[in-house]
Length: 359
Picture 1 (cartoon, rainbow, N blue to C red):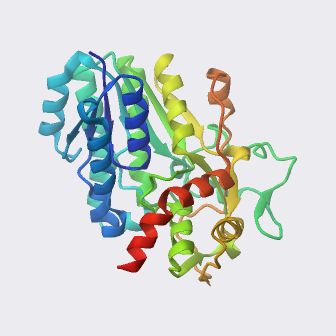
Picture 2: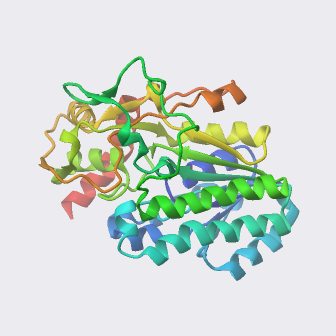
Picture 3: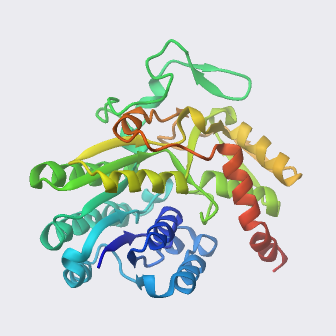
């Protein structure tokens, strides 16, 4: 029996991974206690996704309503499935640098201590399994904001002659920078995943994502840029842009493209690897560009306002250079650009959001 364990299994990336690997014939163990609702409120709840997974996948999906900070319960799960566990995909997190300031202990407990629990459980009970961690570009802190950026009509952009014009590589330093508390807790987890790989010769990888997105995202103001932007456009909910003239740039990778990244790594794993992964030059937009696309798709005007105060540690320009991963795994190709992502988010959610609007 081959089993995949997915933390945050009802979230954006977790649910996509659950369906993907169940579709390949794996049994999936999902660990998710819907802390996203605790972090961001009822609109961010992933309960609807958990119910869909249990209904659609039936015998191939077993859900555990467990907090990854609970070492005893995590160890109990791993002890039960032991060597049948072939792959661990760790997506559970406190994902917002704004929220982390409100409760640093919970943020660090979930992101760092929870990751340690999972790594040690893997080492003790499933040492040959592949361990994939969804890290973040926030491990680089605000270093990207010191790049020589040029202001264009609708976006900030980097000079074509700069070494990072194709995107930011893994050689950017993570030291001497403002990370935010969220960034710091993810750095701790990131380094742990690398160290368990190198020190114990485990097949581990950190994927430092830009904006991870897709139709399964329970987008909210503090997390889930494209999904929340589209939701606000559809439901006529006021939206606020924070700083940088609305020209800040994000690359966006569809969760399906990301899961294919994970699958390629699973088939040919490496020890203690680190990859920047995101939409890259293939899929990126500024806030203003994203609004224009949403308005075009929905045929509605977004009700938005501008605040001069940017979020602390927020990136002005982030585009991932995915070439390291592409060189290691040349079979991987991206399918979705920003426009395709937003179109799918709209088509998948417009009916559900319209029902919410009527209540």
